Length: 337
Ligand SMILES: [Zn+2]
Image (tube, rainbow, N blue to C red; front, side):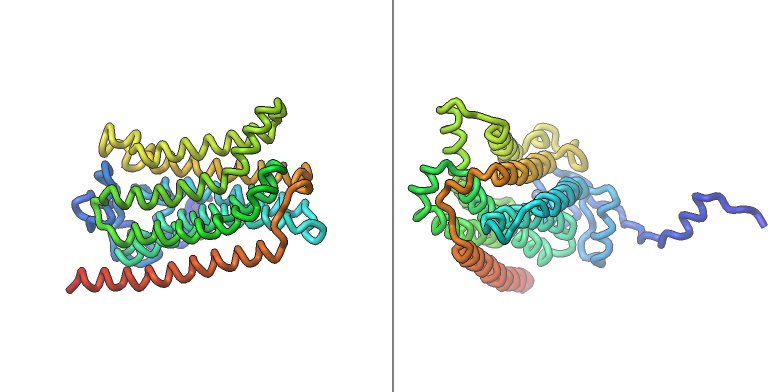
């Protein structure tokens, strides 16, 4: 009997992966799946779900979009476990705001990863995947505002703006969730400018609101000459956000050489990298602020208030998702008729 090589033995132990049909050019897939300036590398629609799951290990035009959020999701999840393990939740309810921020960041990264991986299954899956992606973005924005106000503010800011900040934050979280999903379902490709305005204005206003405590605090630190490492870390995560916005809105670099960045180097991948880095740096920065105990001087929301706000935002996300699911079904039914 001829002895088998170790590699052959190993290959025999791994179940055979289903082979992936060749990827398609843009004109071979439904219009809904076509991305501007991306010519090739589309996965075939209407395949079994495991085809899309296993495509995580194959080359196509969504694989980098998936990995650029799956890897940061794993890093952030690890950081959330290790950092929150060092905190005493029973002694200080503000620790829950940090945990929520970590959970919000993980939700947004994971839902985005899943959306890019599974959206090519069908038009229905495409809409539902991105509606859930927007839920993740809105929820993350809410948790970022909650944590940054409760932990990172300047004492004056927290005292003066507390009565307005949280109602506005909850309203903004709900508005972002509804607007982004509505913009996705309401308009068809090629998307009109109105959709862009609707989504960017919702996410932009949410971000400005959630960052306002940090922006004011960094300005005051600079004014007082008390900028420290944590202040600069706040500047760093805001800079990563601005970098992400640049790549999302400019279509750079793919618009200069359509077809060249279909698989690697597309602006949406660079946008993902910037936003994921922002989430990881932001969590670490807020953790360090919490560890320093500066939040003990702030006018913070009570545990009940945090719970009520969380419940309202989650309820809005659920109702919005169910409402949009009905709208998607109706839209696709009308398209068939
Ligand atoms: Zn994305």
